[in-house]
Image 1 (cartoon, rainbow, N blue to C red):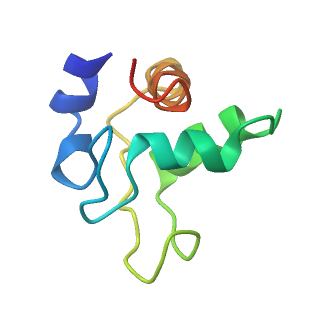
Image 2 (cartoon, rainbow, N blue to C red):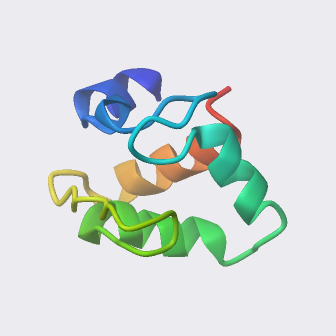
Length: 82
């Protein structure tokens, strides 16, 4: 999954352990821990973009990812990139 995240530009704004422009994956995983709706909600946000949850800077959409790729990336992020 790290290769897909790299190819998709995720690491331009995120890292596994440290906030860059967007939150660190460990912080995303902690925020959504136990939220059964998070995987679907976040996969949609990855594909369509989003704003306001982590601050003023919006996350751009990634329409180049298909639904399965977005779901796989989200599952990986929610596992804190391990």
